[in-house]
Length: 132
Image (cartoon, rainbow, N blue to C red; front, side, top):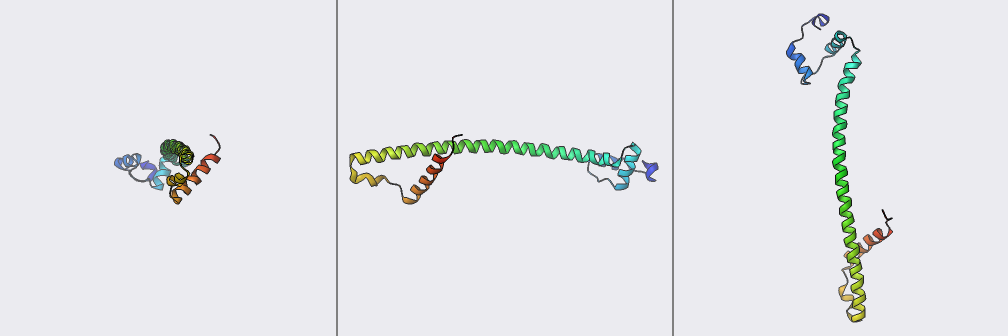
């Protein structure tokens, strides 16, 4: 390389280049490709391929974590939905019982309007959701 460049390349510079702690100058890259008898694009693409592969692996790891989190949340939603369904059934049973015992007390167990409306909306969504 020194003969082709017309200057000596310090061995520590080469070591730092190999360790990717020092950038390669364009003239050094061209000379290295010439000394190795390969096209410059081969050297450049090999480095890019390593960096690209590392990024792909990183993204795959992040995807696996996200998929685990998605599954955990899906299970949580399923548990909450089951609880809502159970509580709604119990509420209906309580209403029926209250009406049969004393019609005057039938309204005493009602939820406040805002939580009742939220619960009713959620139950409509659950009831209309396709089984899956």
